[in-house]
Image (cartoon, rainbow, N blue to C red; front, top):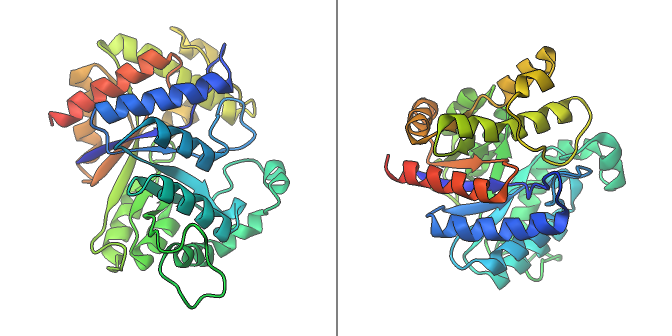
Amino acid sequence: MKYSVLDLAPVPEGSDAREALANAAALAQHAEASGYTRYWLAEHHNMPGIASAATAVVIGHVAAATRTIRVGAGGIMLPNHAPLVVAEQFGTLATLFPGRIDLGLGRAPGTDQATARALRRYMAGADTFPDDVVELLGFLGDNPDSPVRAYPGTGTHVPVWILGSSTFGAQLAAYLGLPYAFASHFAPDFLHQAVATYRAQFRPSAWLDQPYVMMGMGCFAADTDAEATFLRSSMQLAFANLRSGRPGKLPRPVADVDRLIPPSVRAGVDHALSCSVTGGRAALRDGFARLTAPVKPDEVMLASQIHDPEARAESYRIAAEVLAGM
C-alpha cells in the first residue's frame, strides 16, 4: 500500500503565508526523503489559515523544491475554473516537471457562496461537472481535430483523479475509468459505500485498466500517545472554528481542548475527524490496520494539520516508518 501527503499549506497562529509556503516546500522535501509517493495541495478560498488558494502556483513552487516525488492537486475545484485554463496550467506544470504532476478534481467550490460569486463561477456550475471533466480530459489528451487546444497541455496526459465524499464521484470515476480518492479525512460517512460502488461499476479506460482507490486519513504521530493527542488539538480547534463560522489561522495546540469546544460542536468535530490515527508507533500501527482493513485501499493519503512545522515533519516521518513496516 502506497502512502502520500495531503497539505493545505496551513498558516499557523503567529506566522504568515510566506512562512507557510516555505514550510510546504520543506515538508515536501522531507516527505520525498521519507518514501512518500505523492504530495498534494488543496484549493480553498477566503480562509486565512490556508495558503494554497492559488493551487497550481504552489504546486510549481513545491515541485521546483523536490526531485522525484509526484506533486499535484487534491484537488482543483473544477466549478471555479474553465477546463481549458486548468488544462493549460497543469499542462505547463507537466512540461516543467515531466512525469511528476497529478490533477485531482473536486465538484465543490471549496469556499462559501459569497466567495464562489467573487470567483465569477457559480454553484450551478457543479451540475456540469461530468461534462467539464470530459472536456478537460480532451484538452490533456491527443485531440488533433479539436478547434481549441491547450498549449501547453495537449498530449501531456496528466493523470486525472476524481475526488469525492459521496457516491456521485465514485460513479463518475468508475464510468470514466479514472482513479478515485475519497475525502474520508473530514467526511467519512459514505466511505465504504462509495468505494464499493466505484469498484463494482469500474470500466477500464485508456487511463486506467483496473480500479485504484485512495483513502484520505488524518494522522497525528509523535513519540508518545500523549504528545500526539496534544498536537491533534490544533486540528480539532480549527475544525470547530470553521464549523462555528470563524475560520482563522491554525491554532496553537492546547492541553485542555475539551474546555474550549462546546459539547454540541465537539460531537460533530469528532465525527468528521473520526477517520484518523493518533499516537505513538504502536497506536499508529493498530489504527492504520483497523481503518484500512475494511476498505483495502491501494493508497492512503495522510493529512496532518499540526501547528509546529518541525512537529508536523516528525509526524510524517513516524507515520512513514510505521507504514513501511506493515
